[in-house]
Image 1: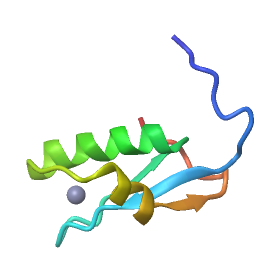
Image 2 (image 1 turned 120 degrees about the vertical axis):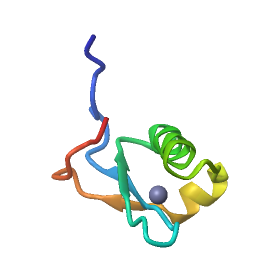
Image 3 (image 1 turned 45 degrees about the horizontal axis):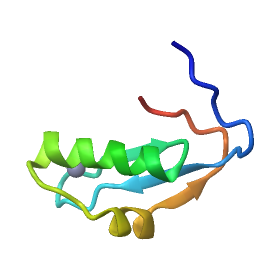
Image 4 (image 1 turned 60 degrees about the vertical axis):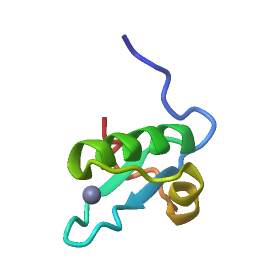
Amino acid sequence: MEAHRDEQTRTSRRYECLDAGCGAVIVAPDEAALVEAVHRHMAEEHGSFELEEVIIDMSTEVEHSAEVER
Ligand SMILES: [Zn+2]
């Protein structure tokens, strides 16, 4: 199944995991997808949880050249 990918915006959201020693970088096409991906990362890798507000607050915009992780 193919979802239509960023038609309106060419920027993605990027979040760096703040957990000590992790350094994972999570990139998603929009805030909702970023929050979902970070939630999954935190649960799977750290058994913890990050607030949506914090994720969005700590995320940065990236240019379209970045690959979108699934
Ligand atoms: Zn992490």
